[in-house]
Image (tube, rainbow, N blue to C red; front, side, top):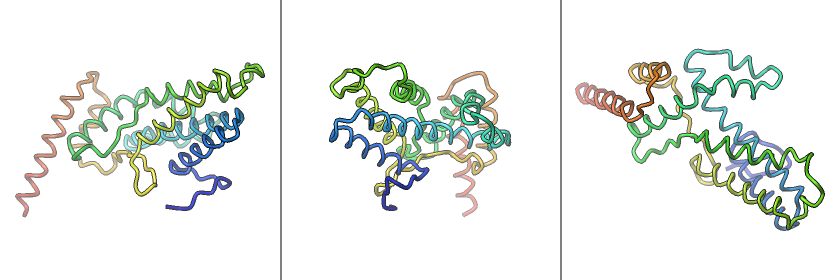
Length: 220
């Protein structure tokens, strides 16, 4: 794992998780409400990045290249998130079904969008603090105590949303471009369907896996 340097920002999950831990340590060591705002901002930045990555992957697999152009525009990430919200349930549920059907012990962790948005809303209170009074920023205030707890919850969410390889954190994203034609057809169908029967989807993916395994055995 690359050595952590707090003064050289890295746009990856591992750097942000370590940075959040460093800031939490400084908050308690220096009793600093200022570091709390920095920690809240760091949490929100990385949660937004993790939230966006699977959606971009899903959009690219559907041959929708407009997402890359959206990012170049004013408030591109916010607009893109809004545009791709319709894919969230479909991506998340397909990933869950795929992991259950294909992988043993489900090592691919589906991203929990509901939990992510809930945390982002809570973190915003410690980033947009223009309406707070000086007393709110006293280290012993309820506002600061609650904020420290929210940052810890966010850190826990981040660590449980990814896999840890020798201290290096990685987000599990299903690359739809690598799916077999049968699996790809199921995903394309799933995006268009109105039902939300994930169990039935998992069964269909299981059948495809079993069929492909039989083909491999036949070839041997």
